[in-house]
Image (cartoon, rainbow, N blue to C red; front, side, top):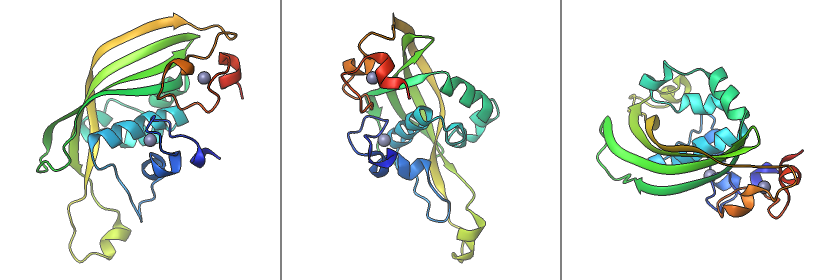
Length: 195
Ligand SMILES: [Zn+2]
Ligand SMILES: [Zn+2]
């Protein structure tokens, strides 16, 4: 079962105890990422799962205008998401909440597309947004509380490069990344990803 597999984000937790609680949230008992790092990790996991809706929903409002779920899915599903590596975090969740934060996560996402292993290294920016509460939740609260959630604004791409061509008989690149989530490490590429 997927829920007992290592989480896609490379946290070394199982999926059920990591990004699944955010991605398969239900609004009645909502659990949201507490800081930019958790949000960033869960967005990578959503790419690995092909869940474009979650990725769209966790864009900041100002960024959603230039996105569509279909475009996110088209690109996300054309890639095999191998591993996430986090390089640096400014991730202080005790910071006084303000709309514009200087919180960032610098990461590399490794993926394969067209038989080519690629690295996308990015410094991501985040914002804490007030998201209107679900009406069902509101009924149980006399007063509407602020419902602050972390959202992804955009990122500066530091590097976006093709690392190498992968042949189906080659050892799978997931073997080179300690944070790769594949449970078939040690296999050839075709054995690792063919279903
Ligand atoms: Zn995770
Ligand atoms: Zn592999």
